[in-house]
Image 1 (cartoon, rainbow, N blue to C red):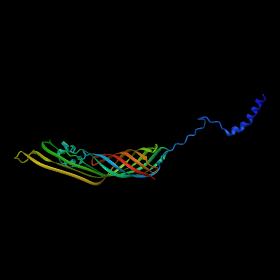
Image 2 (image 1 turned 90 degrees about the horizontal axis):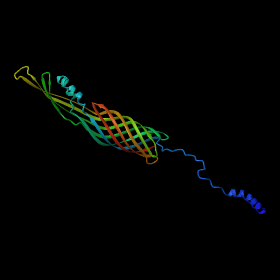
Image 3 (image 1 turned 180 degrees about the horizontal axis):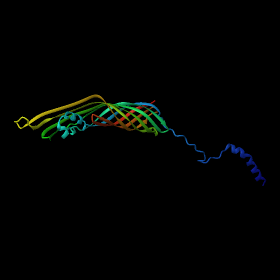
Image 4 (image 1 turned 120 degrees about the vertical axis):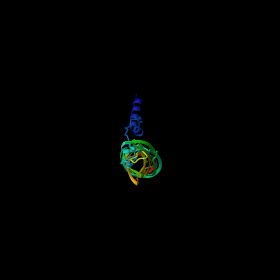
Length: 278
């Protein structure tokens, strides 16, 4: 009994020193977890870059001859009855061309939401010449017979275009997918001409012969160098941060131009670029 009491007393004396030198292990998961705040790559501030592009464009000339033909035939009953101004001799032309340009803009960022304003410019050489199919018809008007042929030509050459647009992006990792909408401005050389010719056959007021044939020919043409085009644009793209200040870009953009001389046109742009964030 004495030995037991002595052993217990010795253990009591040693326990404080033992506890000071030895700490019981902590069970896994017992510590308080403090989550870190999420971090986002910075797209805030000014940026600029260069780009290469390929543009596929289409121009519709089917209604472009109407005002010129109507003006040429304004004095003839032929126009009032048979409306040759509505005859379609020009068609739609599709063409593609490579281009180059640049962009500059400014972004504002809230967490992973990025909103910005950008000016994008492209220099290209889009040559859109209308396909022409001359049309000949015989028309009877008020006892007169007209043998009429309508021929025309048209072309649009777009050399420069730019867009001012608002961008809306979502930062995720090093990626910034975005959409953009804006206004488009362009410069083009345009040319359009029509030629209406044929014969008018009818009773001869001074016979013989009983009929007389009167030839006629009317031509109209207009051209403009450096005409300004206006329209709207929509785009979708992806910026990828290569380093803290350098990023790569891939983008698709569509531009719809307003009517010019009754010519409607639009273009699809594919771009690859490299930019710098300041």
